[in-house]
Image (cartoon, rainbow over all chains, first blue to last red; front, side, top):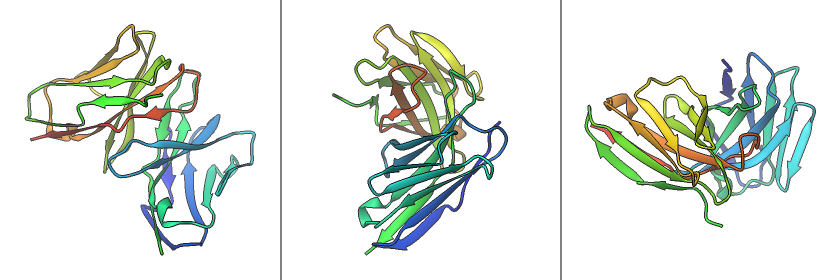
Length: 113
Length: 113
């Protein structure tokens, strides 16, 4: 089965800085990788999806990269704000057409003023 | 358009009891999947339903079961509850199994005493 590691359980940064979260995986290479945001007491919310043949994807202040050689994805939030404080989850497809997702345990990001 | 609705929001049961959780997907979504989330294991895939048929199943004991109705609403059942079943149970929907992006509900927080 797939193993996913997110760089740390918690990350604290100052407002305005760039937050960088890491997702590493083992075993097979997924067809795509997703990032979700989860707030306390709520379900995850989809942010970005990047496919195996894409190197980088951007959406507003968010950027995700995907390196299939390193088996790693980096998730960046530029000009971070306190409202960005949440847990961020990395998710990989399960490797089959009808597959669902493997999730990492998440990184809790805190942005302080 | 209403999001994914899960009921009840909170549930307290005792060991040995059984429980039924309900999920109403986004209107028009026909695929429903269930996840268990715990602090120790993160999000673990339980099963996925499409057109009233179970398409995929995670690595959980037979005490965990589910079903989907003709209107795409889904229920999951846990019999003979154990303390370790205490978790946040999340339902997610998508248009069909081939869609990568999942829309999650806020979950049912189950506590087993």
